[in-house]
Each structure stands twice: as C-alpha cells, then as structure tokens.
Length: 295
Image 1 (cartoon, rainbow, N blue to C red):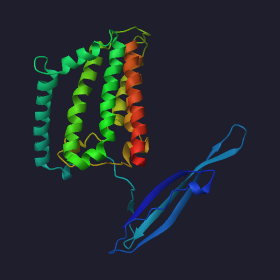
Image 2 (image 1 turned 60 degrees about the vertical axis):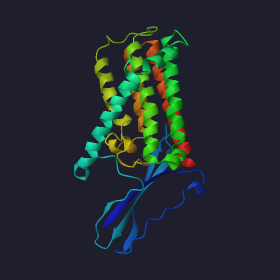
Image 3 (image 1 turned 90 degrees about the vertical axis):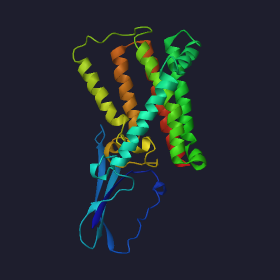
Image 4 (image 1 turned 180 degrees about the vertical axis):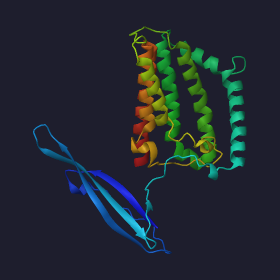
C-alpha cells in the first residue's frame, strides 16, 4: 500500500520557524519507504517586474511493499455520511432522543402557558425599548453561555463525562438560541430603514445563492448528528479535507456570508445589530477555539 501527503508552508524570514517533524506510527507487518515526489515553488509577479516567492509545496509519498499509494491525512477525512457504516439502532435511538428533546423544549421554553421563553424575552426587553439593543443583548447572553461552556468543556467532561456534558451544553444553549432566532424573526422589519435595495434586478437571486452557499460553510459536520445528540460518544474533530481546504473556520465564514446577505436584503438597523452581534460572536469563537487548541 502507498500513501501521499501534501504539505504547504509559507517561506519564513527565519528558517528556525519550521515546525517540528512528525513521525508516523511504525507498521510491523509491512516495510515502508518515504521518498520525495516533487517540490513546487509558488511565485508572484510584482508590478515593478520583480518576482516574489511566497510559499512552497512539498509533495511526498510513503510506499509500502505492494507499490500502491493511498492518501495520507494528518487530521480526519471530511464529515461524510457513509450509509454502510450506519446502525439502525443508533438512528432509532437518535429519533427517540430528538423527539424527547423537542417535546421538553416546547413544554419548558416555547409554550407560552408552561415555558419560560416568553418570560426570558420580556425580562431582556424590559432593559430597553430599542429592538436593536434587545437583539444585541440576546446575542450577547447566548454568546457568553455558549462560548463559556465551550471553554469549560475539557474540565466538564472530566467531571461528568462527554455525553453528560454534551447534554448539559445543548440543554442550556438551545433554548437561548431559539429565543434569539425567534426574536429576530419577529422584529426583523422593526427599527430604522437604512437602505432599500429589494428592487434591484438580480439582487434577490444573488443573495439567495449566497445564503445557500453559506450553509455549506455553517454546517461542515451536518451529518455528525449522532455525536450532537450524544448517541455516539462526542469527541474533538480536526477535519483536513472537504470545506477545511477552503478555510480553517468554515462556520465563521458561513455566518459572515449569511449575515451580509440578510443585512443587504433587509437593510434596517435590527438586521445590522443582529449581524454585528453574530459576527462578533463567531470572531471571538475563532480566537477562543485557537486559544484552547494551543493550551
């Protein structure tokens, strides 16, 4: 069997910034050999005619006794849905869990007669009569809870376990997210109209397409639902293929695209406030996630 790996690294000003080499696990059953296949030097032509070398691409191969080559990944393959690997029992369990969660969410939070969602919205709305301020406050509360629990993930999983912490995380974050989304839907046309571009030819189609594309970034692990519902044991994933080839932070990019598309179309102060809050939350999430990985 054989494998290949593609490594890209910008040309640094000092050579000692190169990362430390990583060694692959040794296989006792087969002899492997590692050889250089090609080196590509990427260059950019400057306006003054000079050539600037920006980065290099090193392509190597790891060939085993049978002489074949297969892709070699440092991280994980993209979150693909392989039907042959699915268990009917797991998805039956997922359906039951989903039904119980939605029923509990409706009784405890959404239903105005039994839930606390309306009380929560009224409490936040009492702080200010401005829908923009309320929108920002709802987003801020959700961001603090969501990112705060994410920061406590390692500690929480050690104390109560991965599945229990995932249930706790979702049980607190989901109601707050629902209230924030519902408030935006109900008040999206309130506030001050800043511009009106809905009559521009082709704009609706362009923004609809942008919104459609954003979901490919927003949900790179959409089919990983069994871990989301804690049916399978939740674990950290570092995808290397798929959407990760475009950006290291696909959810942030997708959220920015979604916010810009909706803000351009709606064009009022509430949409601007919602977009500012969501984009700021995702930018913080990018920083916080990288910080946690660096620890």
